[in-house]
Image: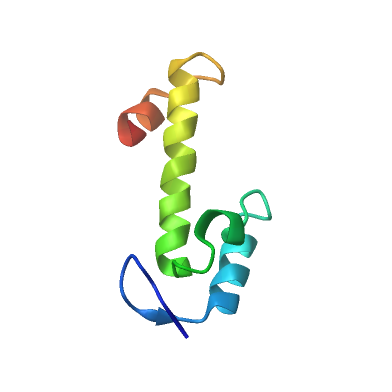
Length: 75
């Protein structure tokens, strides 16, 4: 069992990898982002936050349709 560097809980890397990769349908890879150091319970919300913040930046730059609620929430 590995120990999460974020929350300190022990976790199974294979289970976290599977849960994470299922959540993001392969768009983001657990091993590339977290290399077995972070449990799925920490990695999933962290990645969701990064994705949403990136989308808000793209909205501010006019690259995707602007959603004021999204921008306010994530920036």
